[in-house]
Amino acid sequence: MDFFGITDVGLFCMAVVLLNATPGPDTAYIIGRSLAQGRSAGLISAAGISAGCCIHAVASAIGLSAILAASATAFTAIKLAGGAYLVYLGLRMLLSKSSRASPDTVAHDARPLQTIFLQAMATNVLNPKVILFFLAFIPQFVHAEASQKTMAFLLLGVIFALISMVWNSGTAFLAGTLARRAGRNPQARRWLERVVGATFIALGAKLALTEN
Image 1: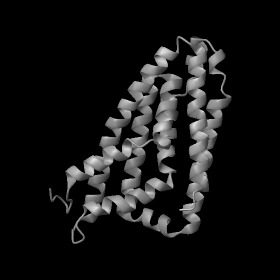
Image 2: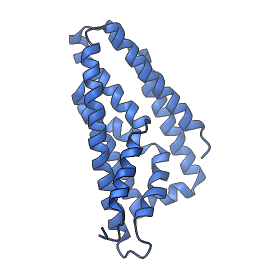
Image 3: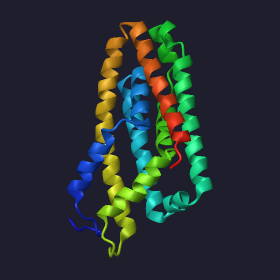
Image 4: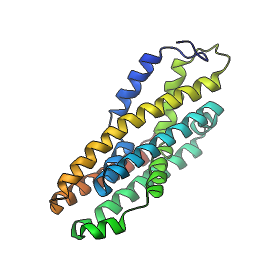
């Protein structure tokens, strides 16, 4: 394919699948919401993550990502904000008392789907590693002499977001199914939430302390 200067689309799609298969903050958030509120919340989380990918694609296409990557201060600020946000989400899960709540109480305390969508999008947008990924990865599939590089970046970003949506939706479905089964055992559900919460904190700390 040589549309807008794009090349090796098949290889690009394969690489995106492999990258989505690698666990990270996005996967942790989707699993966490799926365990807490079921498949619907997990699917909304997946949509939020994909929306974040689209924002990264637009930012890369118009050069904002390059500016952030070149500015040590801006990069550090986003890195710390992203790490702090993940730690905050993890602490909320660890300190929640959902294991003692009845199904009616859990439903009452559930986060609105709009909030879940925005939190998932923030989890993706505030990850500076994703910014660098778009800068380093996507250009490899665009000809240097392409006359419409902006459109090429946007199209590859959309492809990336769609593949991510499919993969993350599968993750949400599986995690939601596990949550439904664990719901019959409140203690098991609570331990699942603790594991995901601890994962959030570990990922947040790693993100904030990574030097590059």
